[in-house]
Length: 263
Image (cartoon, rainbow, N blue to C red; front, side, top):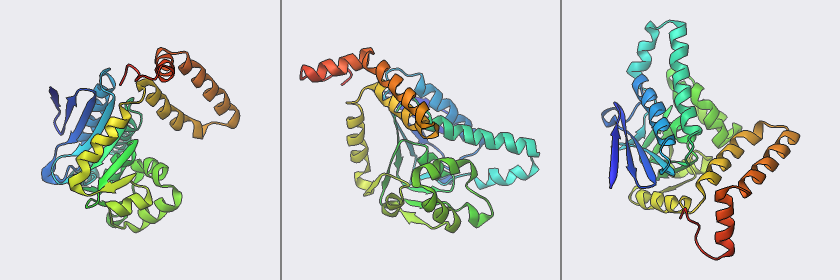
């Protein structure tokens, strides 16, 4: 039994332990505007509150993942004050951060074009799988802009050298090339995309829910720590987890040669 929650520009479909967020502006290739940014933030908040949801898949309706910012919306910004422009840009940054810090593992199902800011939505996810036919481009410089709010997530994913080339050149990539540059983890033919997502979800569901969240915290926090800070932080983390209900259940299941209760 599936449950659907509709927002103005996207919808959430909950099917057992898996939720899917679908950008739903297919007539303009799921380009985002101020409303969609707010919908993403609220949608992620709702997923975080769903205790029975353990994986979030993010994708786009129709033939595109997201064509980035709605250019008509961007053009209207010229009539906004500097302070209003800052507030609007901070909301966009908040939407990326919401995906990046989602309490559930997030999978970008890149079914089609991810242009400009659409790449930020991909890179903010934990894992990204693309159709080989998908098109990627960090094309902001072609219209006199920069991939500013998304830059943090793109650089984290592809590294500085690849980010310099992709952001400065605006080169268009297919899914296979995007995987080579690290924008996505791997690519498969579009017809195989759903099966590939299903297999990945199945693997994630065999892992402890709390453990997966703590893995995300570990990866997010450790790079900014000193060696001493990281040493203390990681020691406390493992001490807490191995005495937790989930940790004890996982250890018992392994020793007793059975599946843990969360499977």
